[in-house]
Length: 77
Image (cartoon, rainbow, N blue to C red; front, side, top):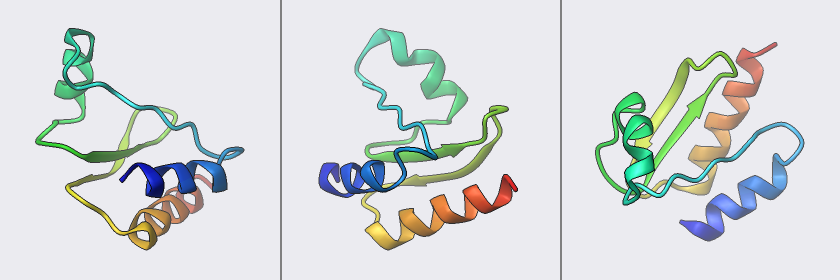
């Protein structure tokens, strides 16, 4: 998944802040609860106000994640 996410990060570098959470770290407990962590990998798109727009678990195709980002960016207009 890293190549897919890296490609998206390059494409949306000026529009989206990407954050990677180490779920094995004790410091991630609050994030795991907030975003209802189920398993790895998990992708969450969050509005600036903290509202979760999309949460997907498991392997995701590039196009699906790109479409999720495009819809999320359009929702902010």
